[in-house]
Image 1 (spheres, rainbow, N blue to C red):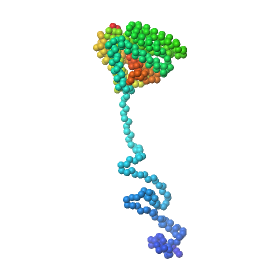
Image 2: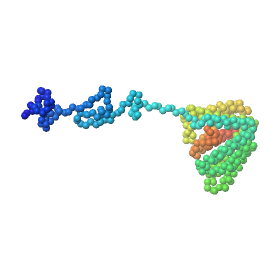
Image 3: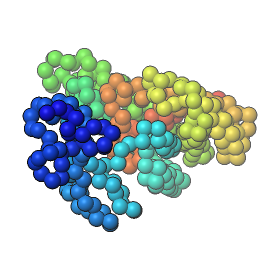
Image 4: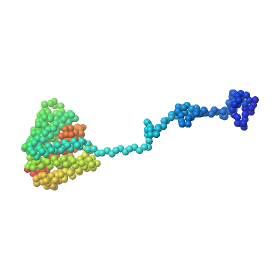
Length: 374
């Protein structure tokens, strides 16, 4: 039996007969499989798919054509219209929103600072023009509180125990002596206070004696002695107006430095001491203080002249700035921002006296030179 009995390519018959075994039936075994191995690959079985779609599980279970196994890819569910994907893929090229510009900060609570400043101003002016002795008492109280703040910070941050009791008693006496007996009374009270500090500290162990008494003498000079020049200004016939001029020029200088420096400040004045101060702020302090000085000397001080006020304003701007830098140096050495927290928006009493204390002897001396001590 030859291969021609199973059909030829011309007849188009390549499979077994439909009428069962017999003539035309393909013999089983390799004799059949080998010649027609490429022609007899089974067709894939495709299940019936409904017209309107079907279950996804049925589709995944459909037979695949034979051949190399194909790795199943995970099917990704498509969101319905309007549905937000749970894990949206990030857009690599999407533009990032620009950060919002930061506004300049004043660094303190301006509302509280203004309220406290106005309240202090009312108390000072009222005591200044009603009863001079009351104003001297206000200065003495400020001196005692300032000494308490300074000695407390020295003890906390440096372990320096400057004796507060002789400093407070001697400081208050120094202010009163300056008002009652002038410069001689102030110097005498200063010497007695320094001596009291030396003696008081002898009651404690000798360790640290030198640094304690040195800090005590420094505190006596820095706070109460400089404050006595305010009391000495008050002894003149127009003493209340001299003190008011001193206060106004110092406040205007600080305000001008703050306003101009906050708005236009770029070049640092002393970055190692006070990073917030700028050269532009110093120019603002000079300009504001000179204008205010000319007005005060012309209209508030007896026999004063506007050109004297210009010089007075320039000197106040310089001394107030140096005083502020001086206390900033002390606070930086102590590692603190404020000397206290007694005045909301300002810090402590010493944080308000920093510009006033070194300015007081400057104003007192220039007023004596310009218009005399009477």
